[in-house]
Length: 148
Image 1 (cartoon, rainbow, N blue to C red):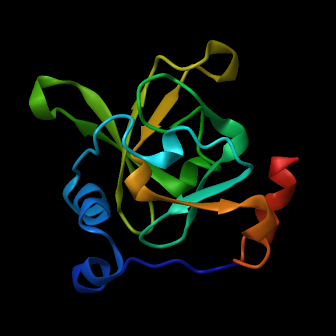
Image 2: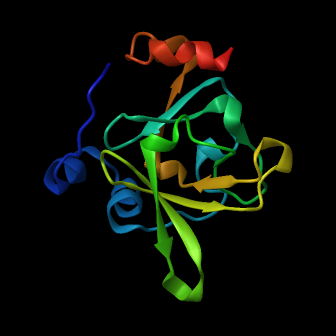
């Protein structure tokens, strides 16, 4: 089992783009429809851009029409944490990665009912996509059967 860790702000500032850093470390939100992952339909896994920890499968991704990559569920509930977010006068639930504590986005109760009713609305800048054909080489082979 691969071990993931939280890196220092100094390391992350060097490794991430300014938008990726702002989203994951300062809870910023990218503009809707601005990230290529919103329309990505390739098979694979979405991982935390700051740590590489697996978060979402492409088979749980759907087009919610909101402008951000949306998923019906994470790979496992223990990979994310949910926190109350009352900023900007809204009552929302923030989603953060468990190990790296990176801001990912928010979860809403307006997702597909047949898939549990949740919509994990995630900033593409918080994710790294690993295509199915690259998963084994990049250390995610154990998740390949979940995509079948």
